[in-house]
Every structure is written in structure tokens, then in C-alpha cells.
Image (cartoon, rainbow, N blue to C red; front, top):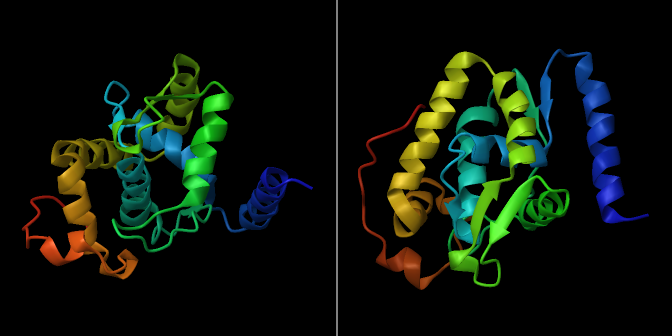
Length: 184
């Protein structure tokens, strides 16, 4: 049995269990699409930044939200912050499904992640199913993350999520920064 099939079977079983608890269930691929849809005309640049933005939106809006269950991204500590092979793999699956475009994918830092027209239609439906306040906050949070740029997001992640950082040159050189946004 393939890994992909077992992931989908796992999610289906979780969805069945959670229906009794009246929780909205988001698969990890749906979360990826929601994050990209929050700024549909602004691709996320860089594989590491892409994975970290998915993690941040999950952590800020869904992790402790009693109304939602989001599939585990299996994040682990890396030199630049939380990383998930599962997110990268699902992005590839979304790409081959015609929902996601990855440009310049041979260069991790230059890769551009965005939704296709078909992906936007699907993501819009998901996005509109969220509470209106959450939609607005996710859009604003994504804008703020995009404004930080590659180095800014790395610094933000390394300050906010130290338990997801392994010893690195970047960690020892980071600056203490006061962030002007947080919905917590």
C-alpha cells in the first residue's frame, strides 16, 4: 500500500471520529491552499519560507482552536526552523493535481509557490467556509509575513519557535527584533 493512500485513509478515519465532536477538519493540503489563497496574487518565495509560513498560520490560527482539527504536518527542528517533508510532498502532489504551481523548483530559495486558476476556485470554497473574522486575520497575517521577506521570516521563526531550531550559524547571529504584529 502506498504512503499517500495511508495518509488519506488516516485523514478519513480522523474525519469520521471528529464529526461527532462538531469540529471542522482540514487536511494539510487544504491548509496549504488556504495559506496561498490568503494572498492569491503573491506567490510564496522559497521552499523553506513556504514550509514555515504554513507552519506559522497553522500554529497561530488552528493549533489551539477548539473548532478545528488540522492534519499533523509532522514538523521537526532544522537549522532554519520548523520543517516538514509532508508539506513539501503534498505541495508536489497538489502541483501534479493541477492545483498548485511551483516555478523555479530546482533552486529551493528561488522556488515560487502559487495556486493555479483551478486551485484558486477550490481554495476559495475552503476559505469562505472559515469564520469571517478568521479570514480577515489570516489575510493580514499572510501580508505581514510576506513583508518580512526571506531573512525576516527566518529571524521571526527562530525567535518565536526556538524549540524548532537545531544549532546553527544563523541562530547564533540572529538579532532580537520586536515584532509589530501578533494575533495572540
